[in-house]
Image 1: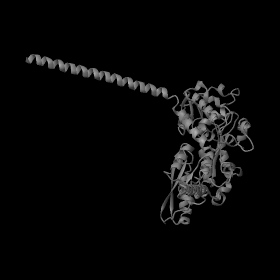
Image 2: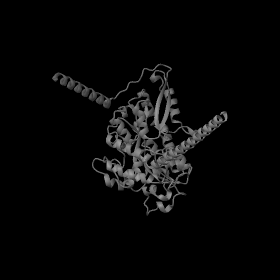
Image 3: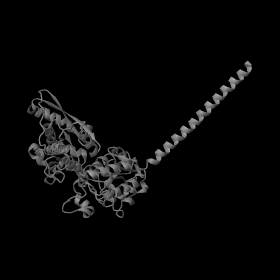
Image 4: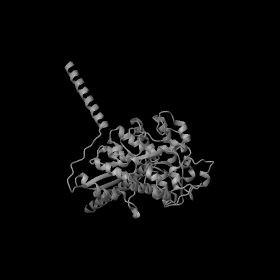
Length: 460
């Protein structure tokens, strides 16, 4: 018995050491080796990014991926033994979709561009490659100092900033009553709960941003670790659901530009992309507080081409590519060359947007300090440990699970009655069909027997 216990204890200790070793090795991986390339080989670099999030060559504009391929094949081919590259580019609608795809390991990606809180999560789970950003990315010197070593990557060893911005409300000036967004109403998130616009309101189709709209509105902590806080936000979203036209991701562009919806929460950069096509749209930062975010370029630990991935990130920071992407996205850039480039400034000032006080697109992006916009919200949650409480933080596993569960509950809420009706109708139809069939069979059998008896009597 003692021998068995000792053996079990030994196995347990060895298992624990093995798990600890695996966990530690996963967290401290700093190198993924490149494969041995063959001269003439065509290498596919897998880039996974948000939809509509790179200058794509449409309508004759700069094609970032095409230009990278050209640059690499003309200038870096021999450095990698005479290979050529192609970019296999795919998109995702939310951070959570990207995470799921990366987590299940079904696909391998070389470059991804997640948001701050998701980067924090990926780092904590050992899913990103650690590298010397300043040494490996020559153009990193263009990044503004305040964006280096951010809270989600305090060592500055896993990510390179790509864009940043803030959340707000996009609305159609011809469909929304000016009295609902005047000084008295103080530009509030409450607009999204206004019954006057029932059927004309859109909501994010992802839990983090959708819950945030309710939490900012009611002064709830968007990074709370208390289940009750998330339950309270859920009730607000359930109340809102009956007013919604739908939950959207990239579909928001067609809906708002096509004027088939009046109100939607989204990001200022996307608004500028939309207003360029639909001048009836306008935008405001709700006074209760908004999300301030940074999206950054990272290399997953599953990369097959780490060195070429770094070349891609470095190219994205080249002045020409950085300006082209900033102009296409409409988001603010953490790139010093972009921010100070006279042609870029002129482009943004002549963008076609003019705010109520004469603000230009450049003003909207760069002259709205997140600390000022979030002054009321920060007063509720700022402390020595949290500098920007309006920024999303990585959830604990317990809260992540809770939020996912609540999101599923929200999506199916209000649908029960519909399914009950459908089921009831199905049952009624089935009962009626059975009754008709039974009656038919009975009549048929009765007729058969009558004819049989008649024939029998005739024979006698």
